[in-house]
Every structure is written in structure tokens, then in C-alpha cells.
Image 1 (tube, each protein chain N blue to C red):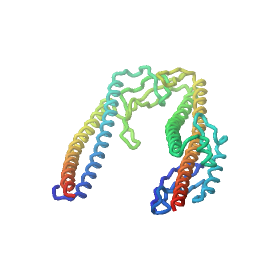
Image 2 (tube, each protein chain N blue to C red):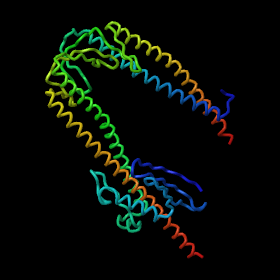
Image 3 (spheres, rainbow over the protein chains, first blue to last red):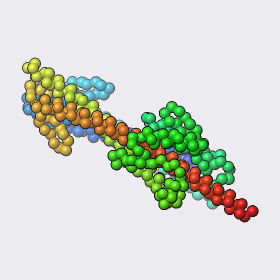
Image 4 (cartoon, helix red, strand yellow):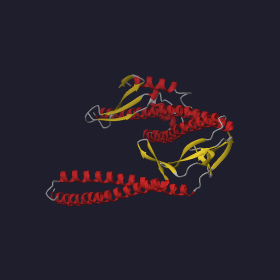
Length: 140
Length: 247
């Protein structure tokens, strides 16, 4: 990196900063998705404790609830994306949630590694830029 | 010549307004303002102030009430015919008048953001209420049939479970603020209809408010430009008078 000129260093730093920001955004997204999945997993667990035929208020929309009974707590529908829903039994549903959480966690770890590497490159470029600027400034 | 463009866009009927700051001579101390004004489908390059004035006047008169009125708490901007008399009426010099107008502009922008946020909320609420109405109507239809309804409901995001809804005369509506009330079906329908109509009416009023606000913003910006121009003109004439005195 010492051989690069001032403009190249500046360009490199800007590019690295942009990449670091993008990676941070992705990391945040993964974190929120993981939190939501964990909530879903808890809800499933709770549901499995309820007996069939238990009276409950069924939410039909966000603000409308109708009294009813829990039908078959052993069957759940999981949303696998792009409008597809798969019917699974309760243990399968729990397993699906667990697997998804683990997948997201491994992605998260990989991304953290890449992000830290990029960040160190960006920092190094910044330091080089400072030293070069200081070298150029006294001579002018 | 250096041109610095600031585009202020209004959507809808109020039109769009572009201000160009242009140095008329290379060494002139302050630039004059020319205005490119697009009103509905017509584009007028108003380097002559008279043309811009006529358009603004028509806009000011077409806004809901008289030009100096306010609408639901938003102060109206009055169109300035003569800058000199405006300044003497306010009792301010040019800089403080400009500052006052700029502040007004900021206030308008704030109110606009608030109204836009309210509009977004309402636009989200209305389809929800319509859905609730549909469901209650379906429930009422099913009542005579005598069989229970099997429904899938959301347990959490991405997880749905099945429930069975027996015949029931009442539904529970979430009214917000941790309050849920039980209503018989007919009353629920009436309440939801009422809510829907209120929401639609407030949305219309909101859209009207936004329109009014945009008109006032444009009038204020034109006033700023005119006060600025007048000031430049004054300085020029003073400089010319001083130059003549010296020679």
C-alpha cells in the first residue's frame, strides 16, 4: 500500500468504507431476523404446551379476535418464503426453527469475519493517507 | 455565469418551481434571481418579474380562502405586491425580513413532514379496517350454516396454527391502548364502518391540508426571491448614485 499514490489511497479508503457499511447493514438484518425466529420458536414451544380444544381468542386480523377453540395443536404451518407454507407436525416445526436459527448464526459469524477484515483494510488505508498527507503538506 | 439550481417540487396541482441564481455580470457582487416556473403543464421562464407575479397572484387567489388566512393552524403566506411597502409594514430591514421568511419556510417544512407521517399512518390503517369488515361479514354469513369454521391463525411471524371457530354472536375488537372490547356482530360492523368513514374523511382533509401547505411554501419562496432581488437592485442604485457623486 505504500507504493500507491494519494488519489489511489483515497479511492481505496472510500471503497473500503462503503463495503464496511454494507456489511454492517447485512449484519443488522441478520440479527433482526434471528431475533424474530427466536420469538417464533418460543411461541411454538408455548403452543405445544396447550391442549387441543382449549378455549382461546383467535386473531383473524391485527385488531379482530373471535372466540374459538384450539383445533389441532400438533399441526403447524411454517412460512418458507415466496408465498409457500408447509404443514409440519409440532416437533418438525420446532426442528425447522432451530435449523433456521443455526443457519443464520453461521452466516452471521462468517460475515463478522469478513467485515472485520475489511475494516482493518479501511483503517490501514486511512492511516497511510494521513501519513502521506503529512509528508506532502510540509513540503508545499 | 454560474448557475446554482434549487429545485422545489410540488406534486399535484400546485406546480413546480425552480430558482436560478445567476450572476448577470462577472463582477457583480450579488446575483439576481430568475425564476423558471412550471404551473400545471405550462412552463414560463419569468425573467420579467411581472410574469412571475401574475402566476403567483393567480395561485394565491386560487388557494382555499383569502390569501392571509390560516387553515387548521397553518399560517397563510400573503402575496407581496410591493416589496418596499411590505418592508415598511413589517418595520424590518432586508436581512431580518429574509430571516423571518426563512424561518417561516422551516416551519412549513416541519408541518409538512408531520402531515406526511399522518397520511402514511392513515393509508396503512384503512385496508386493515376493510379486512376486518370483510371477516365479520363472512362470520355473519356462516352463522346460519351451523358448522364450525376452521381457521389458520398467526402464532408468530412465519408460524400459523389451526383453530376451530364455533358459532358465536360476538367478536372482540382491539381498540388500542391495551383495551379490547367484546361486541355483538352487528355493533362491530357499525363500529368498523364508522371507523372506516372517519379514516377516509380525515385522509381527504389531510390531502387538502398538504395542498394548501405547498402553495404557501411556494408563495413564501417567491417572496424571499423578490425581497432579495429588491435588495440587490437597491444596492446597485446606491452604488451608481455614489459613483456619480464622486465623478
